Amino acid sequence: MPTRLVSVLVNNHNYGQFVPQAVASALAQTGVDAEVIVVDDGSTDRSRPVLEEYRGRIEIVLQDNLGQAAAINAGVGASRGEILCFLDADDWWAPNKLASVVQAFRADPRASLVYHRLQPVLIDGEPALKPIPRSLCAGDLSRRLSRSAGWWPFPMTSAVAVRRSAWRAAGDIPEHFRISADAWLTGVYPFIGRVAALPESLGYYRLHANNWYREADDAAMLAKRIAHWHKSVEATNRFLAGHALPARLRMADHYPCRVAAARLAGAGLRTRLCLALEGLRFAGEPNPLRRARDALRTALELPGVERRAGLPEAVE
Image 1 (cartoon, rainbow, N blue to C red):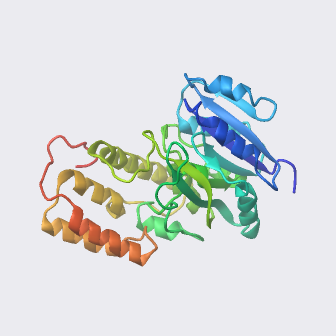
Image 2: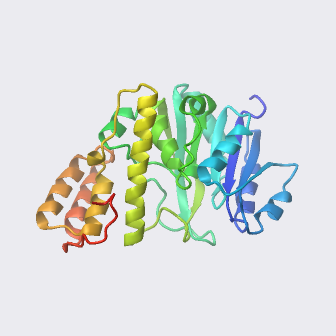
Image 3: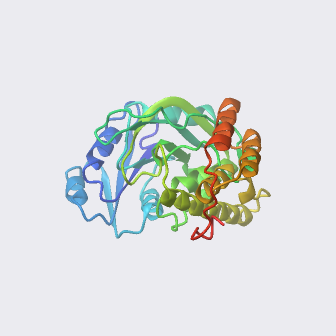
């Protein structure tokens, strides 16, 4: 295996309490000689002194607080590997993660993106919830994403790896993805090449107040998700148009967004039934049993009182 075939890119902002575990897990990988690059995105806690303790074993890139996308872009710019593996500073990996990812890329030369499941854990590392994502998608996902407004059971940043050749084809992550930069990676790379999915949980996703993924969402988080989905679809369509790709995404096909809007606004029986029927046909969820479960929940659990006053424009 060529030296430095793999680049590990850790993005950190004010996670001084967590980043040592992330870095240690990257350095402890077996069977792969990888470079580890940590980009500190303008931390104001003790992150930078903590990272200095690893100098000589990792490369440290310091920048002002520009957001997750800018941090990842800076890390890729400083890297040399042909496989780029991303790790959020509050997560960590199993020792065989990189070896499994390399094997998956070798098994499918047309794969642009490889991912695996993550085990959610509490702040102290105690396991919580089942591994995510529950459903796995692999192969050519471009048609599926074209029919689901780009939504699929996508992985989190710490589970994603891409080929450098695919990164060059896609270009840097747009810097307006200050958070949830994984939405770009999982949104455009399936249009560049195939996707490989590993069923094992090869990493740990720490649940805390700053997380995007949670068991239940309040109104503020629902509105935030809706706005994010709109921006992601707009960014993906700009990418598709700029690369002369024929697919275009429509927000009308984004079933989770439609359900979130109904949860915020309230829904009558007719709306609930219509959404339930849409859910049964939703292309974004490949598992028919989960589609049926989600459709049933939509019909039963949506609030029935109209509450449109003061909703964000994206929701309306």
